[in-house]
Amino acid sequence: MKDEMNQRKMTLISDAKVAVLRARFERCKQELGGLDWLSEGSVSENHPGTWRWTRKVRAKTVTVALSTAQAEAFAKAIANHRRLETLLQEMRSLSQQYLLEAIAGPPRRAPRTIIQRAS
Image (cartoon, rainbow, N blue to C red; front, side):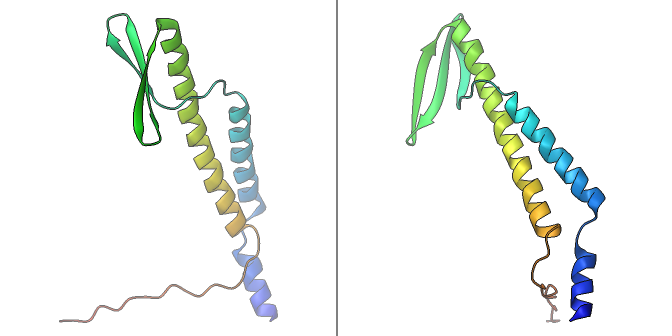
């Protein structure tokens, strides 16, 4: 019983690694707060001087004509949305790493090895 407890304690990550995970997570949270308007889709030039915003709505492609000022604003909003998705993905990864490695869990079985038979 004591050996199992000691083994579990040894497998937990160090305080230094927890601090690194926490710092990266906090940096992501800070950056999230700095994002402005969000939008999905893409902006492209239709003809010289005319712009369009294209996105999917219920599996259908929807296109809207835009002015140059709107196109610039939508391009920024789309870039913000993409950055948001990247940050959320990183935060999920950091959270899962912390939750699995820093908090004691049940004993896990060693991975099974597959023995290849000669044909």
